[in-house]
Length: 107
Image (cartoon, rainbow, N blue to C red; front, side):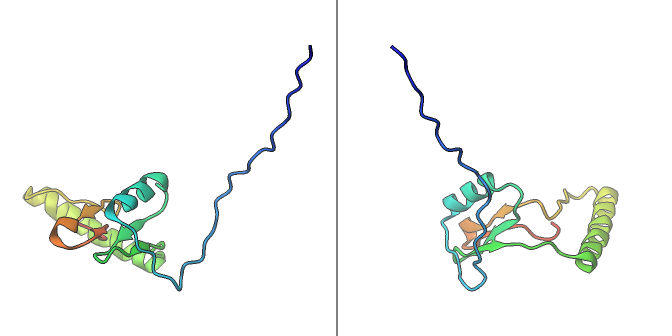
């Protein structure tokens, strides 16, 4: 007896681009966490009303200002040893205080 296998079509897994510039996307804090895990290359924030925000790149001038600010705060923190400093990749969960899940430029 001969068994034949039917080839299955390959499924291309290309990113789906969705234009949401005119729509507010609302997600729960739990769904936000999963979106961040599933999309590590995106800079996402969740503001207090549950609205999802995709943060675009800062651009040259904004990036230069952010770097200068980070250097100053980092040097000050190193000299004073008063705490810890973090860059804009650090996210904070303010949902317990009625806020969202944000990534400030510097903290």
